[in-house]
Image 1: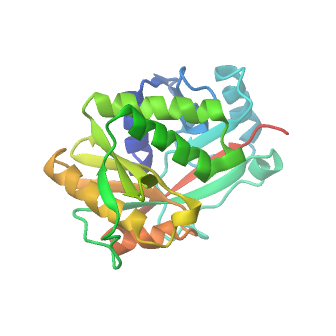
Image 2: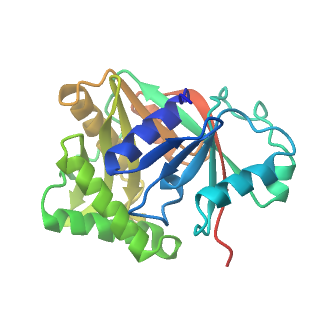
Length: 266
C-alpha cells in the first residue's frame, strides 16, 4: 500500500527516521514506535481510504490485534480531502458511536516562506545543540502540555527528536528570551524534495509575541538552504490560532487529513 496523502506521507517518513517500523498488511499499514508505546501517532493504523459505514468494529479489532497492550486507538485515513473540510468528508455514524472521535487537520504547503507580520526581533533564534538546550526543550513541552502528556512520553519524544537531528536530517529551532526557551519547532527532510515541520510549541506565558511565526520563517529558510527542500509541509488544526500564523508566513491550504482517535479510558 502506497500512502498518497501529503500529510500522512511526510508524517510516516519522519516516524521512520525516528525509528518507527511500518508494516504493510495489504489492506492497511501499521506504524509502530517500539521506543514509545504511549505515542498515539507513532502507533497507529493507516486506512487505505475513507471507511465504509459499519466498519468501525472491524477496524477496532484490527487495531487491538496489532497493539494488544495499547490503551489508545489511533486510525489515519489515506484519502486527501478538499479544503475546507466541512461538510465534504462525512463520518460514518458507527465511528463516534464506538468512541472514535474524528479529527480534521489542514495540510498546508509553501514553496517559500516570508517573514511574519510581527517578527519577534528581540528573541534569539537558533538551533538546539547542547544537553542544556534539549533539557530546556523537554521542560517547554511539560509547560505546554502539563497533565495532558505523561513525563515518560515527553522524555521519549524528546529523545526521538534528538536522534533525528543528530542523524543530520533536520534541525530543531528555539526562540530564546531572558535566558529561557520560549518556543520551539522542528523541520526535517521528508524525502522527495519535501521538508516537514513538527511540533510547534510556545510557552503559554509567551504567546502572541510573534515567536511561532518567526520560528516558521527561520526554519523555512534553513529547509531551502540546507535541506534543499522545494516544498514545505505543515499540518494544523483548522480552528486554531496557529493556522493563521502559518498562512501569514506564505503557507496555503492543500488538503484535509482525517483521523480517528479514542483516548485511554479514565
